[in-house]
Length: 85
Image (cartoon, rainbow, N blue to C red):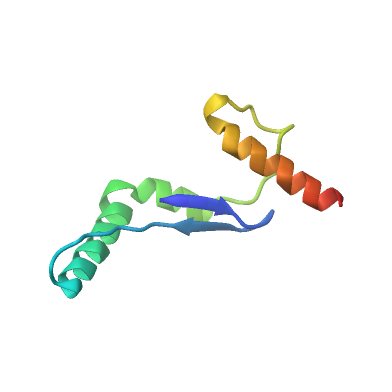
């Protein structure tokens, strides 16, 4: 699952599963079952937190970032430049 910031009040959550069976309808069925299984059995608490969370401030000065967050830092810098233009 991926969660992407849209604006200060909205986040887009995306999950994609792919299976490559000979029959396309079996592939779609398995993918849909995998998504249901993920949200209802593997990550139900994470999903509940995601949909119930309230917007809060974010940005370079609010959060503490580590090396693995480099892409997030770049995104925030680009977002701030666009707002300040």
